[in-house]
Length: 277
Image (cartoon, rainbow, N blue to C red):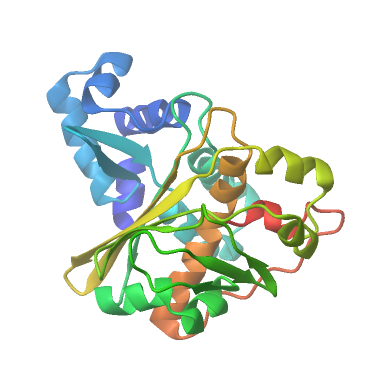
């Protein structure tokens, strides 16, 4: 975690993170203009933030867009925060919240990068094999994983079938993409989602998720991009809160053999499903 703390120690790099928190998915040109900083300086600071995994990038045509990445802050809070007094880590908690909050502007999407001590083949299996997905996600996919093929989502006995649920890309073990599931009445009943919320999210356009897998030495870099949301989307808020914990559980399962324990529900809390992809 030394790289994270060193990256956050510089005021200019914190300004870059603040800029991305205000409007995620900016190009180098946009960051330079918004912060009135020289291109070379911004490039150097971004390189440090990328090395610390606080910023991740996604190609859009010829442009490289920059996104906040909450993975390092999640790792700090998940592994260390319980060892220290709450007041002494308030700044980290505030930053974690800022990194995970969906920006108010720009096209809404969720981008998250994590590094897992595994192989690309093993990670691909964990993303597609029901024996794995049930353990850390509680979901089993019924499909042949060929582009254009339909997908059936089985979550706690709630089977969701829809012509819009399809595999978009499958290039094992490098890239996988598919459309998101349908918010059906059966799904809503299983996860205790009220009629008002169901009607709201069911009316939204269907989104898609993409997993990019890249070997990095003995590690594998996993980048998850969930996009295709309309401005003001409720679904993007839901998945934005759920993906970090789900991917942490995936990482723990592959590295230790056991997924993270599911937290006990808080009294009078929202339905768990609202905070899960």
